[in-house]
Image (cartoon, rainbow, N blue to C red; front, side, top):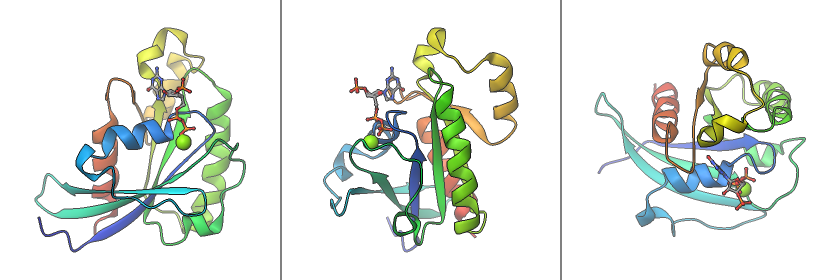
Length: 166
Ligand code: G3D
Ligand code: MG
C-alpha cells in the first residue's frame, strides 16, 4: 500500500481510561512490534485506507506508564495532526479531566481534529456518565467505545483520519 501521507495522532486522557487498550485494539498485530519506546511514550503505526480510497499511515502516540495526566507535555503533542480524547464511562471524573486536557491541547495544536471516546461501554450497567450526558456528548464529537469488545474503536480512528486529510 502506498501510504506516502503520515499523520501523528496522540491519545489523551486520564489514567486507566483505556488509552493503551484502545491502541492495542486498533493497531494490527502485524504492526504491534513497530514501535519504539522513548521517554515514556509508546509509538505504534497503522496504515489505513479511507472509504474514499486515500491511504494514510497513522503514527499513534500513547503515554506509557501510569502517571496521572493533568497536563500534557508540549513534546508529546509536537507535530500531532489530531488526537483521540478518552474518558471512562464508569468514572465520571475522567470526563472532567478529558475536558480540561482538551482545553489545554486545542490552543497548543491550533484546534486540531479530534474524536472523543466514552470508553468501557461493555460495562454500561456500571456507568456514572448518564444517558442524558451521553446524548449531549454524542452531539459534540464523542462516541461510545469498548476496547474490550472492539465496539466503536476502528470507526473512531478512521473518522479522525478522514478529518485530518486535506
Ligand atoms: P490507560 O492506558 O488509559 O491508562 P489501559 O488504560 O488501557 O491501561 O486500561 C486500564 C484498565 O482498563 C485495564 O484493566 C484495561 O484492561 C481496562 N480497560 C480498558 N478498556 C476497557 C474496556 O473498554 N472495557 C473494559 N471492561 N475494560 C477496559 P487492568 O485490570 O488490566 O488494569
Ligand atoms: Mg496506558
